[in-house]
Image (cartoon, rainbow, N blue to C red; front, side, top):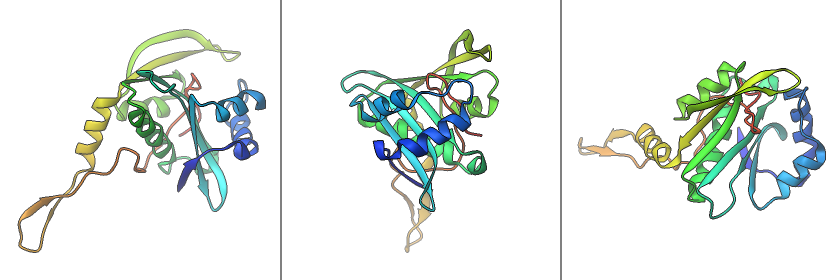
Length: 196
């Protein structure tokens, strides 16, 4: 797993995943190019053996206290290996870096794997949008995360206690909020989608 900042050079690979993951409501090449180029967006890709197998995007205008997870998608053959969680973690770490307080997303009501991933990271349902995803006629679950709580919880989850040479306990420094961890994701694209 190798996560890096996406560039417009990744557009072709991202759009291949976009169309495979969201066949009924994929974004256009122009829309995705704009997202990748926007100073308000922050997109990452996950590579395996030089091939893009996942991507994710955050819309977080600098100076804003709110951000939105726009999309997370993982190639079907690469799902179930923690890539979605790693991509989500990268987005949330960037949100924290930008001093965002709240992150929002929408997830398809027929995607319980993605919903569970988001809940496991601290997102809570705050509403529903009936018939949001068309032409599939699927509701959107709207979720919200307090970034400060996420950073604090993540530091607590990753802190390890070890013994030093004298036998005294020593707390290891927690991982940075942007460190990769296993799990799965989905796409909010103002729809959180394909990351089982």
